[in-house]
Length: 82
Image (tube, rainbow, N blue to C red; front, side):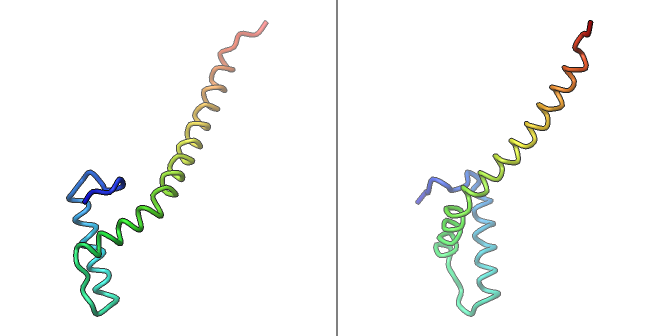
């Protein structure tokens, strides 16, 4: 079953699933299965993905704003004066 937030890289999904299972095994005494681990990944992605995405957009905005400011300064230095 594919969710809209599933990564396209199946190997990455498998690695994440294995890591979740390993972590749960470290802290508990019951062994989760692949379905339970992927449910956990789905919950985390569903809840955190928008926040992570928005943070990335804000970081990109800051970089672009700084770059545009530098371009504006460069253009001002090229301005011919009387």
